Image 1 (cartoon, rainbow, N blue to C red):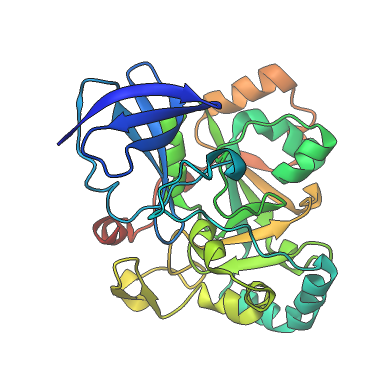
Image 2 (image 1 turned 90 degrees about the vertical axis):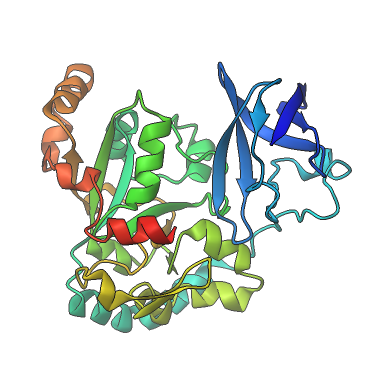
Length: 332
């Protein structure tokens, strides 16, 4: 066990000094009453928010020492502070949006065939209820465009390890329940909704779609060139979200058939589609609330004129987990 010996604030970050730790300093992103939130990124780019106690208490940092990378918002500030054994996450590969939309148009027939054969009816996106009124008014607007348009919103993932801030993350047929659960536990005072988007958003000529067989935070750090980026827009990448065999971070092979899931569920529950630009409100098919009191509170604050333009109801299933939950719990 190791002991937290000091915490200091530097350039807006808290710096934790831990005895016996080879890097000596670990940057953290937030501080709570009795702990701090440590921001780490595993080899595959998967974000991990880990609470560690305040000074004087013991800490088991075995996981931290297992070849993890630190993520920093401002590379220039921390260049000299990053230990040589720790790699900085590279900047995302970019491409001309028109080229990517052209690829999408060429792949459209195959993408539609996958949607039809797998009976995919909708994509799903979860958000805090505080964002719902703006979404119903303006559609789903990515972080980058929100900032340009000065539209206020409450964000769940402020770090965005996939770096695709011009995109909105969606799942196929069922939410990424693992991430959704973590967010609901972390922001436990918040209420949430799940938005169902019509499958036709996949065919939109103005929205680029990136098909990620697992979470985008793991996929995009591995994209090293424009060719790899373009492949994420192709039908093969879409079909790969439903792969017969999935290899875990521990190099274990998972058979899709063993999961006994619906054809329109992705093999990995954390697979996602990143959709660029504004997702027009015309694609909003349904608003799913978890309880009646959330609907009442929303109407009390915003009225029901806007909400009544959409279909909505209580749908608790989207706030639980898939039937293969126990299997993924063991594997991850």
